[in-house]
Image (cartoon, rainbow, N blue to C red):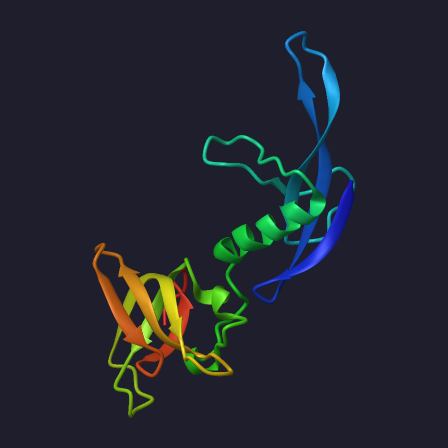
Length: 168
């Protein structure tokens, strides 16, 4: 077992890696070199390592190494864990735009020449385009709205982002 503290969307997440055991046809357990992952938003204590990372069939996801597991779980958790608060849309960079990707969000929309929000939409930002020169800031976001339509907003139109679990 190996436990590491990772920062995911500005949140501390403890990830525990454990070598898996596989049962053969004779119901004998034999050691395996594959790794499973547990994650928890607070420091693990005792035998409570957190939630086991599973696939859509609720089976443990197996990884060939801890390094591979770390990369994959970071990618997976960035889509699941919301940041403690959201930045102003114009403050996001190519390094941290993952915080707002693939999550159900409320997005305040307004005129590009104003800071006022005219209306809000609820949807999932599934794609961002970036400026072609450094510092490669996000320029536009493609959003899949609740009614399954898609709309593109530029980051100057986006005035505020907040979690759908909270009213604004």
